[in-house]
Image (cartoon, helix red, strand yellow):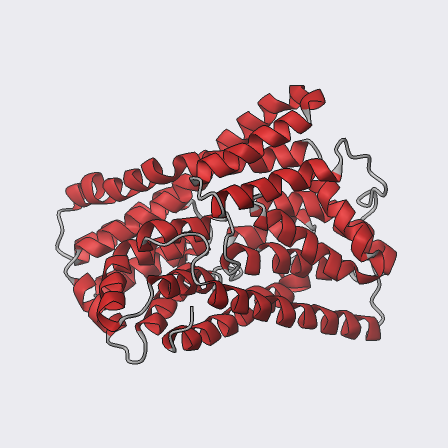
Length: 425
């Protein structure tokens, strides 16, 4: 079991500055070496089987999701939706407008990275009009895109919600009461925090300030907001009401977006190419983490680790939350950490669920919410990208990201663990 923790330590240490595609196999070899496995077969068979199985199961979903997001971005549909919402909410509530715009796009299936790029120019306009310090933009985007729509809201087509269905035999609407409760906790506490921070920064005399040439007001968008909203709604409805497979639901969004923007048909190859390229790297990053989890599951120490987690006392829902939270923090990835944990432990949790009469839906929702607890530590790729796009540093804005994406989701996780242990789903 010590070898497993050594492997995790290697994963965390190297992941901060290097590519997980080679870091994960190195960490897996450490686990295999200390666990007495044959190193060659541990890599070529155990590790690669875990990686390949995940790619085989999930590549179509990654591909379709990436193409959909890119199509919404390059046609201007995502920005049109965001601008319409901002107009409805008003620049005087700029923070709320940015949060809601991000939430609508991510709940409709647009990838988090696309949302960051699409919303940032709009956020600049709104924060400029309201004279809110620019350093709060990353926090507003993170609250809307990286928290409750990604992990908590039932029916979300984001990867965390989809992956949990495969391991736990549930559907995307699993545990609606737990999910909505967690979402409300994250949204309300998050908005209170951002409002508090705005007030404090104003008291210190801080105002909006952007770099020269960065603010481009009134940018022309070649799309109508309805052409963005309709595909988002169709994706959610077909996935949850009609119970279509994820690729069919997201595919319907792709087709509608393309048809609505047929005059921009020359941009379609760009969306396909960029989406395909992005999906390959995205799935390999997650699959590399899954391969690591497969090696962990193969060593004798895994049985001891499983016994320790399941025997930690209290509800097994709490042990699941702890395992996923720590692994998401270690990998800097909510989907990666959750997948490692579920790859290794899902069958055990399902056995416990049957034996203790706990709904698998509770395990599903707690898994997704817990995955969004420590995934956004400073070394997280999404955090680094968000700050880079906003041209800000960790010193400028990480306090808000940390509170909104780590502290508050941990509070939400604790609340729904208690509720789930009481039989509420």
